[in-house]
Length: 235
Length: 297
Image 1 (cartoon, each protein chain N blue to C red):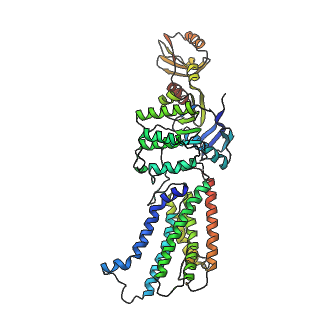
Image 2 (image 1 turned 90 degrees about the vertical axis):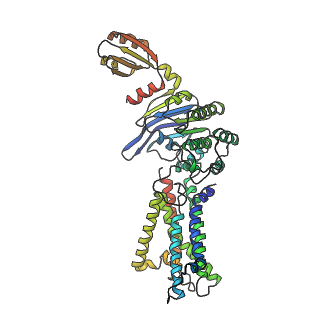
Image 3 (image 1 turned 30 degrees about the vertical axis):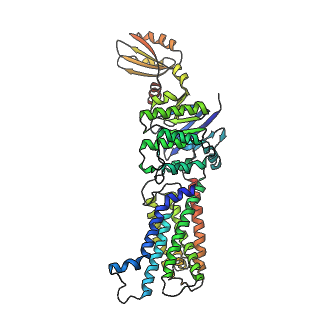
């Protein structure tokens, strides 16, 4: 039943992001109505590039927005400050805190993965060059794996802070991490942000194992830290 | 003494520099309705949170159903047998009444459908109503339903009747009394409504500043204690406080009011040495015990 609660807690957030994607998908349908078109002289590949970068940003947004600790109750579609006292009801149930966290985190990760797949598939179908099924699947897998550290970071912050600070904190950490990986030479090869991107690692190239493995390790560390936090936190 | 469902020894808890509990000793007998009383900030909610594993004690230990609770596993096992009503009566705003019942039911193997149906009917709770749209009173009713239908052996209730109208309060108190009498359920509850505590509790414990100041069987306490009111022709003498067996003395002008718990006749005899104009002895109410023990600290 914790899955049921997690779904009810996140469904409107999930639908909100999914609806945003559908809105973008439908662009070819509604754009002519408003006489929208690509600016003169902008090649199709540049437009695709913009769509892809926007999708990567949406991966990050979805990961941050859908993460939760399973203990602090969240509002269905907006972040609010302060803890909702219904968490006392959750904590009174005969369930370990680890299970509360993992079920909620599991469902949010699944939802994030679905949205990443939808967004990644859209940018790939929209891509000017042809893409094989193997390339598509490989990219989807690495996009999900490289999004997970952001998701795990947001989950860890949800274990510590209220929703407002979870979101602010996660966005600030992402910006800081992005700046660091672009300034420090050794870090860029491990960067999950680059791992999500088809610009840093083109789809036809080899699998970028360094960011994939680093992302898996970072996700595991952050989730482990989240588990320790919820087990030790006093409510 | 009958078996204790809740037992605490030297339970202490601080929030930073502020001590919320200081060596609390409790013994809640099985099947009792145990009123846990104190002023705001006395440590009642902290005690309940400790019992439910939401907080960890800084010192001391406690047992539930005879088992020491020292790990998360033992706390989870105990919580299968506990129903809880929190002070705020807050439930998930994203669920409906029916959904929160369906959500809670599977966690408790002893869930009692007949109690669920009875309270749904009694409280007239609409299953499809969003919890966000329930009044405070209806949320209280829903929480009480969720606590009672668990088939719990111990109900921990923090101000269970706050937000209820007088008729509903009466129905809830009656339901609690029935559960304790008919099902041998132990009810551990805090309330600021001393009249309702007096109405249904058989045991009471008063705490103040994180420490127990009085506890026992309510009828015994009320029969042990007497209020002795003395009126003098001048200011009431301070020396009355020195009388053996006097717990608290309040002086107001020519009147002195003594709370005594032992050898009332002896105290009256000694008090007569102060030459009062009149001496009257009254039985005490819980409210008087509360005020004398809590305010007197």
